Image 1 (tube, rainbow, N blue to C red):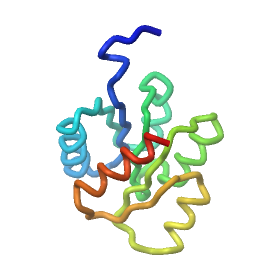
Image 2 (image 1 turned 30 degrees about the vertical axis):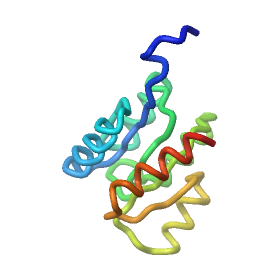
Image 3 (image 1 turned 180 degrees about the horizontal axis):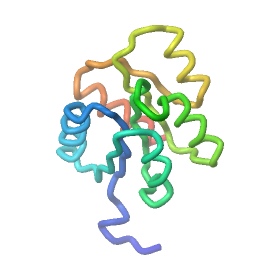
Image 4 (image 1 turned 45 degrees about the horizontal axis):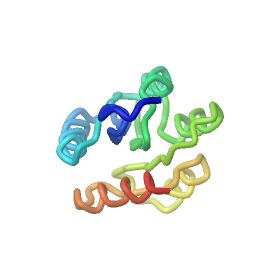
Length: 127
């Protein structure tokens, strides 16, 4: 593998059915130098994740076709080991625990301060 600038890009996959939320989070991370891949549901995300090679995944929990928890379980069963953050409007400890049990590294409740979201993503990427 070469050390080209493209290989040094930080990549994030954002999965959310809310187009406004996708646009906002996409802008936030592009502004911080990330390459952003975005999908509106878990099914579409599963189709692209191998090719996208994200360093971190940010996923909503309540989506059509496949819940965030179901998507995370499937990602983990496929051997996807990158950090996954559930980013959800649902502030319910039981739902958060379900997300963690599915394989999420962290659960954050929307809205949260943009700097906090970026900070959590970057910390998880560092290992």
